[in-house]
Amino acid sequence: MNNSAPQCSLSVLVTAVIVIGLLIASSLSSQEDSQATPQLTVEKISVEPVNPGPDTLCKLRVTLKNAGKEIASQLDFRVSINGEELAVYRNQLFMFPVEPEQTAEIKLYNFWSTETSRSMPKDGKLNIEVSLIGAQWMKIETEEEVEVWKPLGPVDHLPVAANLTLEMGKS
Image 1 (cartoon, rainbow, N blue to C red):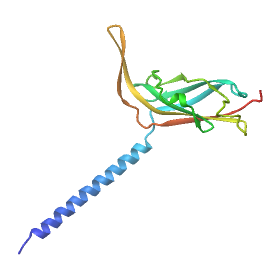
Image 2 (cartoon, rainbow, N blue to C red; image 1 turned 30 degrees about the vertical axis):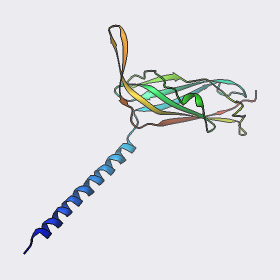
Image 3 (tube, rainbow, N blue to C red; image 1 turned 90 degrees about the vertical axis):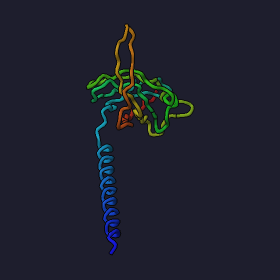
């Protein structure tokens, strides 16, 4: 009598149980990652003036909160106004350090409330979205009187975003 058939079935069964276990563990791990709290967040968007009229130059600032244990920098932002992405951010990284467990206000580029490609909104509102789509953890040290920035790896759980809606003035 040949006993190899039951042994073969048993090894296939054991392999199947291991594979299913690994798939379940992987699924749980990715669910935990997607529910993890970002350590770098957009806390606030500030625009001056707060009620810009048409053709008004606006100052844009963003406040970031770093809940991590390392300095964050190489900040990659995307900014859109009424759903239109501002092209100036496509190839720019902001090399400002955001200290661990601190907040920092970052000056972003000024923008015009209206432009040739973006006319006065019919509802009189400017909807501004600032997204932080990438950043790096950094170690900043002084070596022989020279400041040296060493990337430690990407900040996880990005992008993060915040929105601000401004009521536009008449003039």
